[in-house]
Length: 457
Ligand code: NAD
Ligand code: UGA
Image (tube, rainbow, N blue to C red; front, side):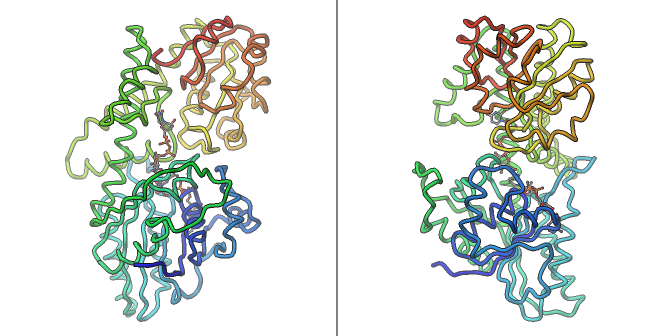
């Protein structure tokens, strides 16, 4: 095992594809990143990031020698060693993962495979269990229809990065999972990751150097298991958050403090401290769609998954609980002005896909309230989604809270912790804070004269 420079194509330049492309280029592979979105590619060619993600533009600039962008697959794939697929797999109406983008990519790639070519297709998109096996068969059938003899293999290589820490996670993953049915293809993908698995690459100074993480673990398995690891991981994390939110609801009733409960529980290594932060619930482009897709897969086998069902129910209920808190404090929402701070589904990203915050703004508007929204980076993305006479887009916290009857913290951006809350109080009509992410210091704000309501504290 040692490093060998490969020709890699990454298809899809979204969160996963772009970060993967950057990592592969940074560790020395020659990478071509392809996306059908011409605006995205135009930005990337100028060295600009189409998404907000810390260190992304700097890393992009640092690896341009090995990384190029285009909107179409090259005419010939003969020189390509590995194609990584990272296009989206959103939810269909019925909850299934929508495979249309992946299917299209498979057709495109297969039409370009050449006689006697060796090619490995690495599936990074989150795809339903059974997909890799099925696609492997489909590609080989398409090739024999074309009369082309080639050695094409699939490797399932699910991605575990988090938005907001996408670059960091891409370089320092906890584990690399490779699933397949061909040892030499699995070996080639292991070699592609050689610098990550052995930490032989050098990071630029501006990246967090305080990582003492151990080397990533490698999990080698079959297609079905690799696909299951991805869905099971997301479903577990979503369930963990729903669990702590369920406990937070009871904390509200009995008067216990969920922050200390989470600390007290998390100190048990078997439980672990991560994903015990109670709040408005989970959103984003993955937990909602992946839990739905897993349930869809189970349904195909007539198998029930009550834990995942409950995790989803609790997550939906959480929004209602918080709305009730607002209603309880304001008596009636109609005619009131509520400032909502944070629109992205979590801090560190401008992604508003399935953002709980965006959903809450819509509900407040439906209940007759008016909303002033502020977010440090996601405002533009939310403009279309929230376009309404009742929603006022503000470019600062102070503008948003001006004569508000209450303020709701919907995303835990650091900026909301650092604002001068004394100044905020002077500008509000009534000093009410609903801290949907348990971000602020309850005691300090109460002492300032705020009515402070958190989630489970
Ligand atoms: P995304 O929506 O940000 O990006 C997908 C990109 O694919 C888009 O830019 C789109 O234009 C492009 N695309 C679609 N069809 C194409 C085609 N035929 N050729 C070239 N490009 C095409 O998606 P994402 O968030 O990066 O997610 C990609 C996959 O990775 C999904 O399956 C998702 O579940 C999974 N995943 C996402 C994350 C995450 O945090 N976002 C983490 C782990 C796994
Ligand atoms: C999640 C997983 O963490 C990644 O490992 C995975 O790769 C990714 O989904 C995916 O498959 O796309 P992401 O959605 O980017 O990543 O963000 P998370 O940090 O997991 O947060 C998800 C949601 O849970 C957010 O809305 C967040 O606010 C919420 N959350 C998270 C809580 O409410 N409490 C917590 O303690 C943790």
